[in-house]
Amino acid sequence: MPTTLYIAMSSLALGLGTIGWLLFSSADPVRRNTLVNLARGNASPIGDVPRRAQGHLPVGRLIDSPVRRGRLETLLAKAGFPGGWSVDQLLSIKVLGTVLVGILMTFMWTSNPTMPVFLFGAAMTVGVFFLPDLLLYNTAIKRRQQVDLTLPDTLDQMSIAVQAGLGFDSAMLRVARNGKGVLAQELIRTLQDVQVGQTRRNAYEDLAKRTGSIPLRRFVRTVIQAESYGIPLADVLNAQADEMRLLRRQNAERKAMEIPVKVVFPLILCILPVIFIVVLGPAIITIMENVFGVL
Image (cartoon, rainbow, N blue to C red; front, top):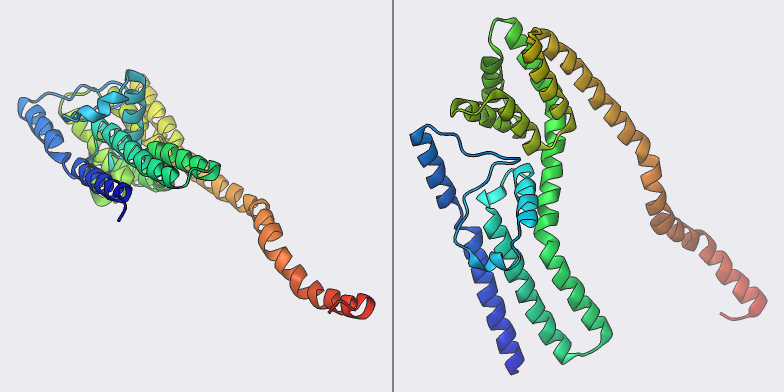
């Protein structure tokens, strides 16, 4: 077995082991800091997005910067912090994955130094660096779509609870406990933020920022204004529920109207050529036999 293959396999095993350790060793710092804050009765400091506990992962500091860290924190918050990941873990995974794939692609290019292999290796290395961002972005989009889908029904339930005599927070808590999915979890987290000392306005604004949902952001602004001016929240909930339901129906109609346009390209590229071959193929063969005597 060549020496380069030994080195490549060793690098792969070492890199995968390190990445696995980074993936499955994140929950303890977050849990410890959260329990300490709850024991003290203090709210965690919340800026634009709540920060996660930072681990001791010096590898990620090679590409760390305030701008990149803020962007990744926002992306992680919108994705719901899958797997309890922290920003330090994500940065370390990006660095180690890029270095590992870069080493493997270098060995591949050394054994076959051609331009296609070089371009393939460069594309793979760059793709691995941005792969975590793409996965988080996809997860954030799915969470936002789920929030948009369940928001009208949630507002209807809250409106019924408020009209029955419950307060706004009690109605939110009841709906969140009886519900499932992303929105119910985020509502419970918002109420927990209020209980540990955060103001209602900031808790509601953080709710909108974590989900990234435009209808939910509009609802949050309406609730804040209603509380400021003393408007009955039952009327606000009814109006917002009707508006959200209308938006959901309009989005469904818009997506239905986009289907013919999206079907055109697969139809032209995949289906029509096969039909032409099946229909015109025998005729072309017959013409070539009779006229040109080729077959």
